[in-house]
Image (cartoon, rainbow, N blue to C red; front, side, top):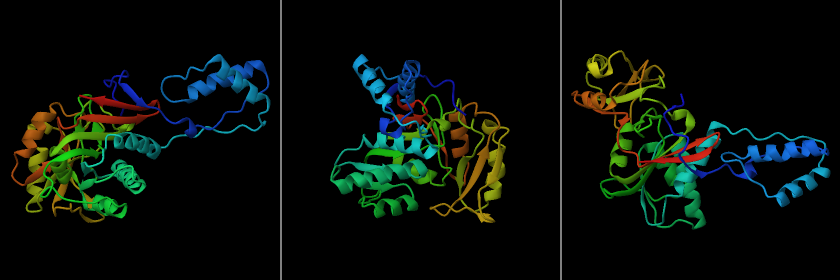
Length: 308
């Protein structure tokens, strides 16, 4: 659910490369040539391209020799958008940094890109602090040296995805099950850059109708599930134990997850976060409030950055 509250005037930081766009067939008539130039402009994501008269002339000249076989412009998938945002986020990384490495499909593109830059020698002396076992495995596989908060309690930059982003850059995270380690690492970071595609934008947290996770101890989880759904601050939510197959899903920390589902956005996310955290047996929750430094958003009109 895209949020109308997100300003369209956000600083536009990157646009989809021209190499991602397939050429469009040029006909030999002057009218169709003019239409071709306009289509080429509009095909570039973001601000329409302004071509000089000379450039327009070259395009028209090429059209005279064009083959009468039309090609189809590439349609960007959600993974394409995630990769665009991830590549932009990695521009924040500098040699010598201690990095918090996020978890999830978008964060995986970030880890891959950092590994690629290390291999090429464009980055050096990077230390990664992973937020999950699967991120640690991926990072090790692409050659990123790893550490933990015990040895690197101050992190220069964390990059991670998010499940929801509201207009104030508050987040829902943890649908991948790594919310506790993610929050610990990202809270220890001087900067926290979030990478999403535009489908993750919401007017209010919980507004997607998808899970807002709460990590709980295994002991008396049913007791805590009932207490969670009866909190006035999350009134009307549905609470479900997360399953993996026919058994409870177990986090990297040997805990369970109770997922909360909302029919409407949470009225007061801060009050909800405090109420959930106050329950004995709750380890942490997926409301990440006032933590993001910047959010990089990939969408059909390009890549934009929103920062506080």
